[in-house]
Length: 88
Image 1 (cartoon, rainbow, N blue to C red):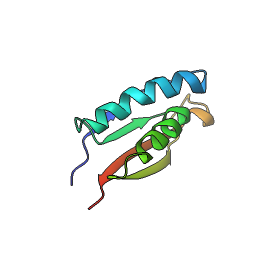
Image 2: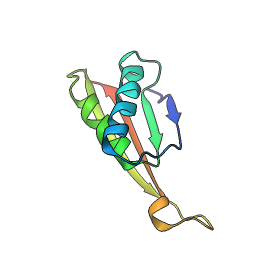
Image 3: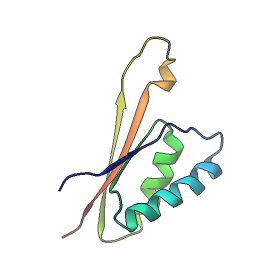
């Protein structure tokens, strides 16, 4: 199964804002328009993982990557991936 990623760079200040955003992404994944999401915001990845885990048909996968780029602070160098596979 190939992963159809959606990538965004938005970072929210609060967990609540991230939850609202993640809920809309979870709806896209439930609707099967995408099956993976990439974000620099750990709060979005956290909330999205839990929203997706409520669906018994999904196996939720997560990954945290680190890459250093000139001019970026260390805390801004993490990328979070959340994707699902269908439980068979």
